Image 1 (cartoon, rainbow, N blue to C red):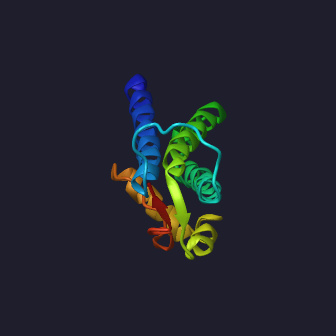
Image 2 (image 1 turned 90 degrees about the horizontal axis):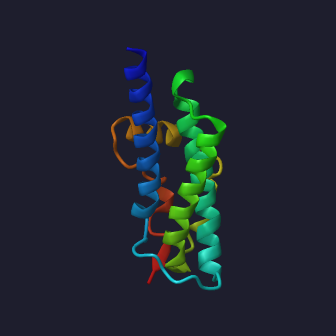
Image 3 (image 1 turned 30 degrees about the horizontal axis):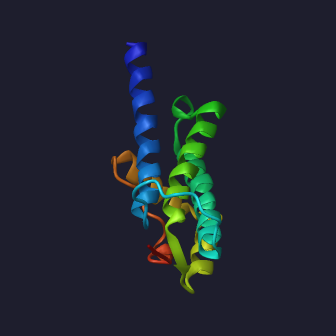
Length: 142
């Protein structure tokens, strides 16, 4: 019985992380692997924002998990790296930033309890967590 519970927890953690990682692509862009290029201002701003989103979203998931379901430091580092890799693919296609960037950045660093709860609710429902509404359409993409 303990094996089944451990396996269910592992599946739940993986599902939660995948929802979060795929949410990055859904929030604006992504696509095929682009050719590496020198980072533009828009790409650097996107990188900064997505780094904050990855870090703070994973912190919300970790804080909202029961002690038995929390990720180990090693698992958390691996998931953070994967999240940032997915974010980079999205940000590689960013060509411009709107005036709403500062408001979005402020809303994800740190995430308020309302946003954390929304992330946890989405993960628990096997849905993709959405960024705060202040982050809607802040980048244009190729």
